[in-house]
Image (cartoon, rainbow, N blue to C red; front, side, top):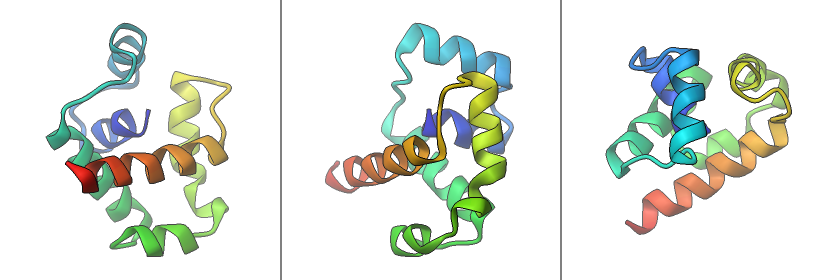
Length: 94
C-alpha cells in the first residue's frame, strides 16, 4: 500500500489504478518503485530519513491516510506507519 501512495503522489498512478494494482498484485512492487515511493512520502512529509519520519506527528500523515482510505477504507494510520517502516527495512537489505 505504501508503494502505491508514492506512485499516486508521483502522479504515475491514479487511485483507481492503485486499487486495481493492490487487488491483482497483492501490492508487490519492484525495488525502484519502493525506493521512489519512500522518497516521495518523505518529501511530502518534509522529512529526510526514517528517524525523522518516526518523530513525525500522526496528524501530519492525515493526507496520506486519506489517500490510502480511498483504496482501502479499513487501512489505519498505524498500519501505514508500520508498513512504511517494514518497507524501509526491506529496501535497506536489498
